[in-house]
Image (cartoon, rainbow, N blue to C red; front, top):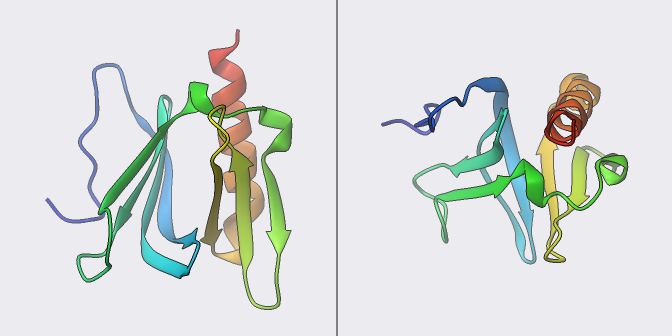
Length: 113
């Protein structure tokens, strides 16, 4: 399976996907970001070091109100914290940043209904 495909769980469907970088302690790794109705999944390109698939249940996001965009000189990051205290940050295309934040927030909020 290519890095732009995702194996889905039962009753799971993709809400949004696109090219992204996952920010790490030492730099970032490129790949593809998926948002489903159950989780956020980052699939790294094959040539990246470290884990190739990182996934986070939407129910593990600490607070939907904390999902935000942080802009740096050339990138827009989507950032949020998990309930375990892990801080996650993904770089997405500037034109899609607001849509990613909206979709993630809606997906997280829909779990709490």
